[in-house]
Image (tube, each protein chain N blue to C red):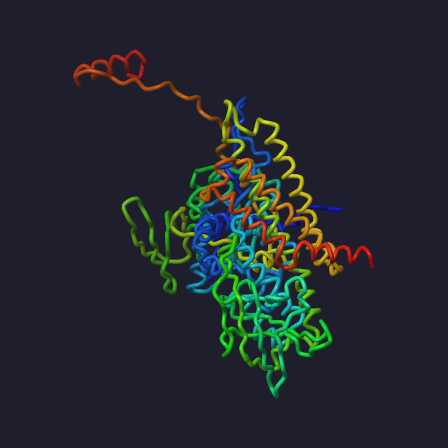
Amino acid sequence: MRYVVCIKQVPDTTEVKIDPKTGTLIRDGVPSIINPEDKNALELALVLRERYGGKIIVLTMGPPQADDALKEALAMGADEAVLLSDRDFAGADTLATSTALGLAIEKMNGYDLILCGRQAIDGDTAQVGPQLAEFLNIPQVSYVADIELNGNKALVKQISEDGYELIQTSLPLLVTVPKGVNQHRYPSMPGIFSAYREKKTLLWSATDLRADLQAVGLKGSPTQVLRIFTPAPTGKGEMLQGQPKEMVRSLVDSLKTKKVI
Amino acid sequence: MKFNLNKEQQMVQKTVREFAEKEIAPYAIEIDKSGEFPWENVKKMARYGFLGMPIERRYGGAGADYVSYTIMIEELSRVCAATGVIAEAHVSLTAEPLAIFASESQKEKYLIPLAKGEKLGAFALTEANAGTDAGGLQTKAVLEGDSYLINGNKMFITNAGVAEIYIIFAITTPGIGTKGISAFIVERDIPGFSVGQPEDKMGIRASKTAELILENIRVPKENLLGKTGEGFKIAMATLDGGRIGIGAQALGIAQAALDASIRYAKEREQFGKPIASFQAIQWMIADMATEIDAARLLVYRAAAMKDQGLRFSKESAMAKLFASKVSMSCADKAIQIHGGYGYMRDYQVERYLRDAKITEIYEGTSEVQRMVIAGSMLR
């Protein structure tokens, strides 16, 4: 069994402050962490490896410092790491990111199960996992808590607000994992030293992936972030008084004045 | 000179800090009150390989450098000094001497379960009449055929009763002073080995401290650690490393006291403003921060020297002497900054002072540390 876990190094958004003058994020001095839901995805992979055996490869696209996130994942128990780092990958939106990750996964020696965190705490789009499955043309299930494997078959437990569903599908498969479905483990002490002294991290560039430079990075991004800002607080709401008929008249008048209707 | 932690050490610090805050801190007040031995903490530490930190990988340890191990003790002690010393006595005082002095078969049998955290360890040197004058111990070990017959009592032993593996020091050749002392690896469950009632201590109350009563215990001669007459040398070498561990424990306590003081000073308002705006408090914080930094440099310098294979007895003595003094001073100031609330058990600060005091006493009193430093300076 070969598991590929996609992780992202993100700023610890609980520590990020907003610059009061520009309304944008102050990223300086904010510690970088592994996106929390990616840790839940890695934890599921570790549990599955304990149950079924196999090898876990952890993959990330980012600047050179993203290697710290890979080392932490290796220390938690992943077997190998791959870092996609290249100027040509920079400025990527979710589509360009999933393209790069997809090319990297295709370059690997086969895979059975891809695990992603549901969404990242900086972008919050939850798009990369599903886009990656589409790129690879494999089935996907999101909000996954657990998986039962039987040869090529996979019985996937998908959680929802009301409970859960069991979905029968097959490998290769991509799943996204939300927070709360497991308690991710800490890196172990032997794991930390093993991560830095023994385990392999491969570094792949756009050239290594034979990537079409128009399909990755800023050039490959159909969407662009123009501005990030805290919205100005809106005024207090108005409580309407009187009988329902009067309140309706008052509301309709108000909406007409505001040119909503 | 570089004073930064390398990547591995940074990850150790980040991991142990998070682990300590989430897994150990929530129970610190409760176990101090009840004095109950924290088996859950021990299990969690064992699971993550804390209990074999500096032991080689092939013996089940993490293969960590001593600086990383020191970071681990500091971070654990910052949230719970009792948990810190449980780990420290197990690693520095039991696993380490086995790693250095034990034979291959002894390592197979005893070091591996210690490093994996399957069994706890303890170090039994002190007796009722032999504290600072450790060489004056009276426990006797007599070789009879294939085994040693050991009789005596050990006092104030950390992890007594909960440990399954003990390093015990006894006289094998009477009348020739410290050169007549040997060290033995003793298993708890042998006939004649019993443990006294746990001591009711001022601080580190969840750590189990008790007397060992050895009544005609028979220890196979294969369990002699090192050579006959080498016991005192083993004890002193072990305590050299242990000093760094206790220095780290003291540092953790001092840091906790400072962190609590800063938090409280920013929140507590008197005369319409946070007390952090008053110079009296500011100066206390400044003094605490400076002495902690100095202690930190001493402790980690000693650990780094050990990693580099240099002699470090004087430096580890300086580290423990200074850091223990700083932990007392910072704990005292922290209570003062917290005012009346600092005196109440519900606020952890009073515990820091009760925990800090022992760091000036065990693993060599501050007086012993001064003896070591003076001895080195006046050679």
